[in-house]
Length: 409
Image 1 (cartoon, helix red, strand yellow):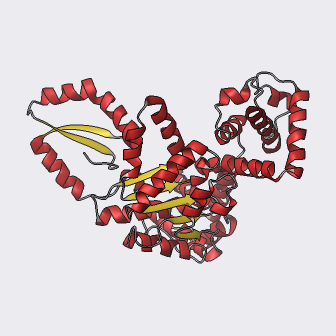
Image 2 (cartoon, rainbow, N blue to C red):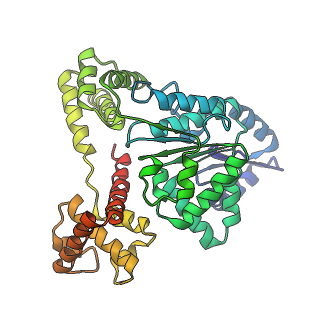
Image 3 (cartoon, rainbow, N blue to C red):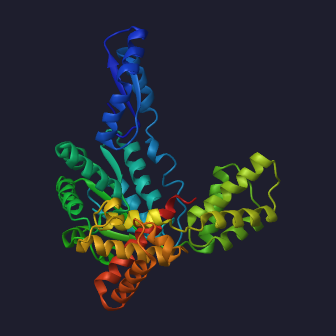
């Protein structure tokens, strides 16, 4: 078996093609479901004879790229003043894992390249040492898997999966802040990996000090190694990224077009890449010659597509997740102090982050009337002004909501 390689292969002691097909048909779905529970990634199932397995393995060894990390390499990362330090730290970790800067904590706003560096470390280490056990997980998925493990009585499998790795890559760690059971599990996972001398790399949209509900034990450990921030790229770096991305997609842009794109897309690399993809579509689908007018239209389209307005569903989901509730509880009639506070904050956030009316907001909560919604909003507004803890909670949930913008382009 090859962990984290995107497929699962098994040798069958038979040379009968019919038997191989029968195994795949009868047990394929169950095997893939079990693998997903164990490794949190989708696998393709190949049932091979022993001779075929040897040949397949030799082909795999010639291609060490992890499927979920494909394209995320240091060669494809454009270095500028805004990310030079983080890039150098990532390269150092990839060259000497477990011994240099452990853990490495990379933070910065969405769309600036944190995940690229995280996966480039994984790609680099995997290429040099294919047998290294590498695990990549997002903070919210770590929570989801822990909940499933507890529910299904498979916590020992969960521990074995995450505590016995050579490289632990964790994206968006901010999502575990405030979740006590998750933080406790992550604390022990962190300790096991660190004490074994293995490497941990973490990304976040903010430094540990700004995560008000993060367990102090975790905050301390995150600060043990090296913290590196990534800032929005300057004009020269944005131009280099534009040229590089265009070249990858086989698109030749004039200097005027490159400058115009870089000058108008200033703070989010994903949107810059979105413009290049849009121009590529103009060329390939519409057979259009790319002019400065094409560039202006592409930017307008991408900026319009990229305007992120969270839905009430996203706001309720992130608020419930923060308070460790399910969405039904938050929307329902429970009057417990924790649930009532979560409900009031979610109403406040829907009011401030969307254009829904008080009546429309009330309909999200089993038909509460507009007076109840207004009272809840005013209460939260007052608490934000007078209670630092509430203000911090609202800020953290808002940041988590805005993180959903990652998928907008």
